[in-house]
Image (cartoon, rainbow, N blue to C red; front, side):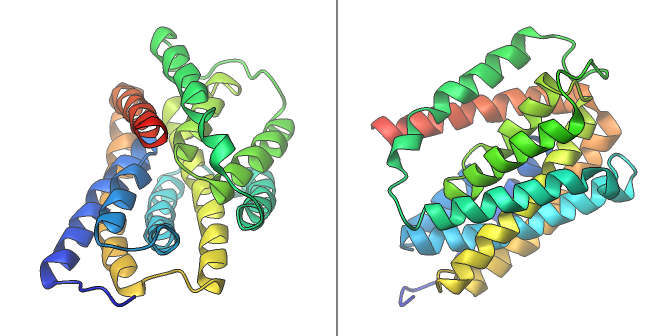
Length: 254
């Protein structure tokens, strides 16, 4: 950690956390804003990922608390999902340290493309509750393990996958899907953060500076999402998913 961080860098960290927290609380994808900034400061990938998880944990906790406090989601209704997301994230965070994760990168843009086009062409998706395609317990078992593992193992687009799955599979209204996503995101974030702390891969001063911005941005974004509903969330969600796809394609192939 012997690289120079100027006072301006801490202002940039705060501003980045603010924007990432706002976007992430509504549609996911905040990591694609914050992680490049950390890498541009000369951090190793492991240190940047660990620091990113530190600031993201504050943002996801702040936005989840806002959704819970406003009554959009209830914590006790999501305990099954929290438990299986926790287990999945533990397995993913452990696995990424044992094997190479490159093979998984190629399929992620394809999966996000499906979420993007399904949401784009399903005009009423998320505007009102739909009919679930499986039981809630089965959904949280399968997707908690799967997306928890993915977030611990790799990460980009996890929030978009969660929101998309809740809209498509469970027929949730978009505001509730966004709130539930934040709860699951916090669960997998805090697990991955713990692993990075054990490995000594967290730059605390930068991460906490970004976390301050994350808290403000996440609370603001969550509040606007609750107030304005699906008509506000839907275009931001589609934009973030599309930009995530472009970003991942660029990282993987260029």
